[in-house]
Image (tube, rainbow, N blue to C red; front, side, top):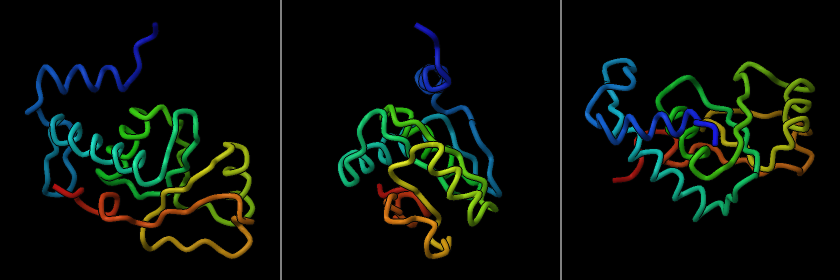
Amino acid sequence: PPITLLDVFQEHARRQPRWPLLRFEDEVYTYDDMERRSNRAAWAFSRHLGLQPGQTVAVFLPNAPTYVWTWLALAKLGCPMACLNCNVRGRALQHALAAAQVTLVLASPGEWFPPGVWHGKFGVLRGPRYLGGSPPP
């Protein structure tokens, strides 16, 4: 079977958990940090949102560590991730969501979506604590 980016990440997390993976502002996140945070997020997505393998999830988050562990969590669940440009709005956003056959959108707490963009087709989750900041312990 082909080796995925998730496979490579998990191998590094097993072999060198304390190695830095990401530096963001004044914080350094190790492989172990990202492994633990993504596991917690995957659990929450599965348990509280009922995500199942194959469900496409759109991610409308800023470039921050949250984005990385969200991607890893979705990959662990087998959920394809539709990466959305945070600047896209209106018809372009509507088209991107429809083309990806999105069932759920994970968005930052401050994101505003104009009426009519959703047409009731998508669930929108805005900034739960484990997405908007550090995940629970």
